[in-house]
Length: 402
Image (tube, rainbow, N blue to C red; front, top):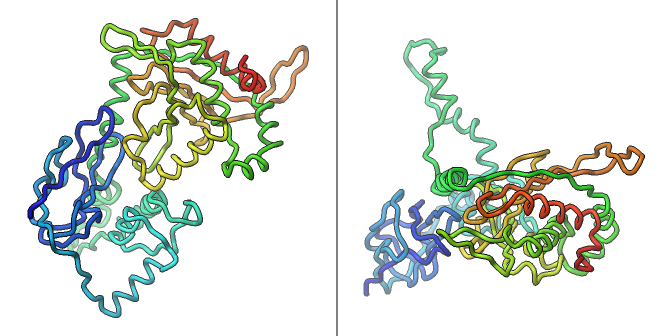
């Protein structure tokens, strides 16, 4: 029986994907649930598994093709299971060196390692329990790209001068096509700039109280909740307090209408080797700080492993981006359309500030709120940012809801 392998539902507002890579060739046997093709959307990369065991008889969508939801990718002849060809002794030895038995690799990571003939012992693992993530492998490949490129150049036997400018440029430059994720990120960011009347307002926040609270309770917090106490939980709570007070900041424009939302799905921007992704903490207003921190940590691990699903990044109403983790002192974040506002956190830096009649040194952070002036007035934007500042400088306000 011939089975059609189709493009699955890709998530809210995502209607098409690009065929990034076929993991199986025509005529190969596959097992049920074995990944056979990798698709790339504007949000994530995802693997499509075989629905049944059988033989891949026909690949219809080629690598690089754009395919819509429910389009046929390939045909599978059901009924034949995959068999493993015995490996020669030297192949088994090389495989043991490359993929040690102690390393539990996800399919995506294993494919990267095998395709690039990597020794996992040379790659630093950042995943849970020392697990190697997709981000670890991609980072290793990127850091060694210059060495690999130089080693792969075939020496010329001609008598042309070795200092030829053309040859030097060929070695120093590499042209690669933009991934679909990168293309759509670029398109949407530019679209946000072209469509919204985007403006940014700034403020600064004294992090003394939150840092003291974190220092006092971080060990017991981690013990009780099995999650690290960071700053994101406080900022999410502070933003929700501000969004409740200024609902336009949580709204969006749809045609000639404004849609006000009485729920708070907070996107947290995460940088990955493939590009920026924004997983969404659904109904964050119903979560405690512990619940928020647990969600953030879980999404961070999934992002590094390339395991984020489209559903993880849909439905956001407001976004927080923390450029401070990369050392940014100040920036103007771009809207994550169709949302109308985004908060930018930045590096904590000790600075002299006036406190009453005294000059004191305090850990300060610049905050930036970019917003769509078509729907949010300057008064609302500034007041929202002041509300966030007040909540962070006196976190007791978050507990008392004042």
